[in-house]
Length: 88
Image (cartoon, rainbow, N blue to C red):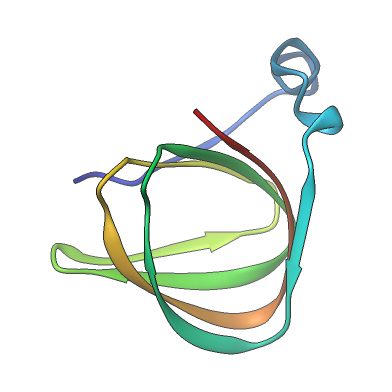
């Protein structure tokens, strides 16, 4: 299960309506997570290492990330996170 990380242009962010998505915030911490649905998110602040069976993925401020449905992982938050998110 692949985590997709990309950079979006301001136009792409507007087209997707990301600025109207809810915001989630979390302090430095480490926890297990399972995705019941696909999540798209845009990191506004912070840095996270997402650990999966296939390896680690670092996500940082400005990254647009797609987490696939069915993914089991560990979130290791290195710097406090603030992100827009949307489940589909």
